[in-house]
Image 1 (cartoon, helix red, strand yellow):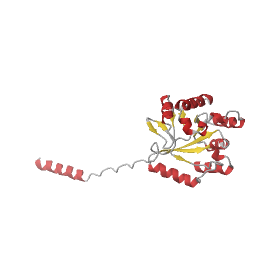
Image 2: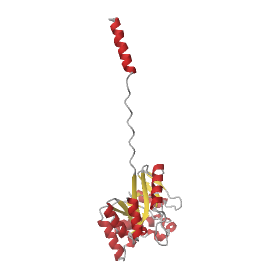
Image 3: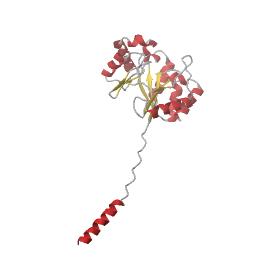
Image 4: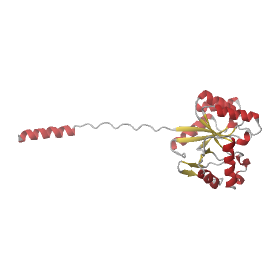
Length: 231
């Protein structure tokens, strides 16, 4: 019996030593998300953005200025294009865009807040999501980030206290002020987006918010640039 027991133990030890570990499952790559966001519409160029998005069937966000619609039938038409496009979400970019006097605008937080509230009501914007003009500021998901050049802290905090989410951006497709034409080429933008996304240098990991402006896509070749970036 004793010899039989030793034999059984020996077999168990050998089997344990020969046991093959299961290969570890490779970690699945994390999904990465790219958000195309367009500021300052409706403008000449909004109609081209609308047609591209309808054709491509991808979701985008537009941050709208109410004063652009006032007294301008063409801009009102472009605004309706956005409203009727199932792939476009409309958000708040203030009523006056601070009249392009940003330090003065944000220097009066109460007045600036009222300007956003007026825009929300005038354009009947459904969601309480805001982008502040000329100001890369965030108040989102219990995180905050303030612009390095323009002090809009009090206005951002005032809006957040009213339940608004404030969205900035991670990378901008820049444009020339005089004619709205894009600065970077499509290839340059693609490389910049991928480099910044993969480096983790974004407000939210694995998410990158790209800032564009409606006026960048007034001409046919610029419209083609946007389509190429999407594709």
